[in-house]
Length: 137
Image 1 (cartoon, helix red, strand yellow):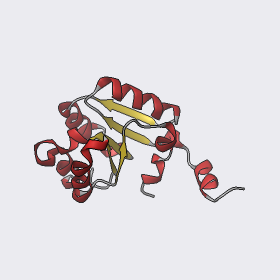
Image 2 (cartoon, one colour):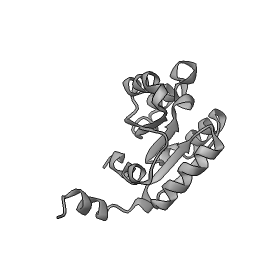
Image 3 (cartoon, rainbow, N blue to C red):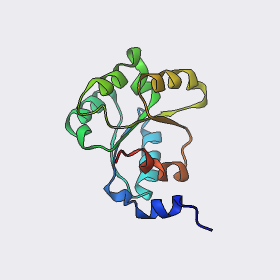
């Protein structure tokens, strides 16, 4: 039995969706990058706040989703997330926070500031394959 969702997903071409992946842990970033690539997304990955700012300025406006580790977004009074929410070219891009179970309160604050959603590590193929649902039409 097919429930509408499978039909919609089959019409989505994930290879056209660009994701900016930001994670300070290179091993975690590589693992998530691999999962995203298996889902056919186009991915640009960065490992530091400096790289994230540079990439947001150059690639950010062309991204469909920003998938970023909670500490990168929320450090220094959520400086990075606030930057994204203020920048006219970036504020419409959904931000999905990558978090751990012990960072829930920080993550909730990120949602209050404007993040669209969050995912808890370890991430799995199934949940990443549904990231396309955050893309604005």
